[in-house]
Length: 287
Length: 205
Ligand SMILES: [Cu+2]
Image (tube, rainbow over all chains, first blue to last red; front, side, top):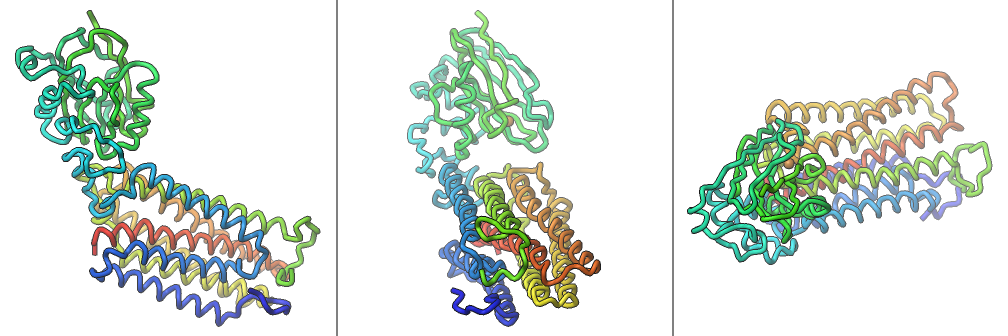
């Protein structure tokens, strides 16, 4: 550290200039590395090390932490450690460190189409039945879900034989344009009837879904669990979900067919992160 | 503390100037502020609405590495201006600090160009998708910090003409310099985590 006992232990301008050249060279090297295909697999550790060196040089010499009172370093490093912790905690919590996550930006649509098997870290081991309701044609989606009636998700669904026999009524629900609201506050269905709910997403940019859940705390609990279910269109693995549409892109629509439960209080909600606070309503069961 | 060059003017229990402790405590909290913004960007990376612009399509590494270079060099100018004022050389201080402010403004110019390019050419705005929201929030807040820094540096430059920015007032420059270098190191992290790693891993060059 500061071995000299002279008045000023700060570096000389020559040292500052050498650091500036090093910073520039490291940045140039980083850009060059981007174009070297053979280093592709090692790119994260390489960039982390290089930027850490740049960060440390500026903090130690330009911000002269190396020569100042250690209390300053403690203040700064404490904040830095907490920030690093927050970044890692969030990445782990949201499963963003999963294999291949950064490999393809299309990974989300990919995994929706193939169920969540690809994301073992998300622990959706028992939701094979949801494959059918995923990113496929809407009609197929609703049909498939009804054939897997043994599955917890579709406990209210019926077999395909029943479905074809019944004349299902279609209820349409939309969004208030770009606002985070459904265009209806209440919907209703007759107990035991097979109905089709069609979600028309009239938003210009937002994706939405329509999920039928028991009234009460379940709505918020399921919506919160949905926040980390990116791979399944923000729909969590939860037995209480009666029916749900796929995640519907702006300007598109999708539907789900299910049997209205015979009794109980229900609510519908959009489980896209953040939407559940305003996008919900009561689903009334008529006898 | 042999290396405190300025007269603090008051005794403190730690022997350190409270203003300097304050700026370090502030910078520590700023780490957490930017840390959560960057974490949010990473968490939602690759989860944009299908059919909307992706990071790979819009991020322009050659341009951004140029602006990164500009900001890094501004940090060098800043430390030179601090070096000048701590030696009592007000004339050199003015030159260096003005160079710092100009490079800072240049960086902002690059960012303005980048934002405009994203919005006009690619139709990417904070409302378009999760990438747009998190990208503009993270880099926009950094740009706001650079803007505050440029105003701060120009103020110090003008202040020096009042004649009382001397060696004894080096602390004023020191604190502004710490803020400026901090904005620089935050950009080092943003450049790596928001630009380089996502583009590099996806093979987007
Ligand atoms: Cu929604």
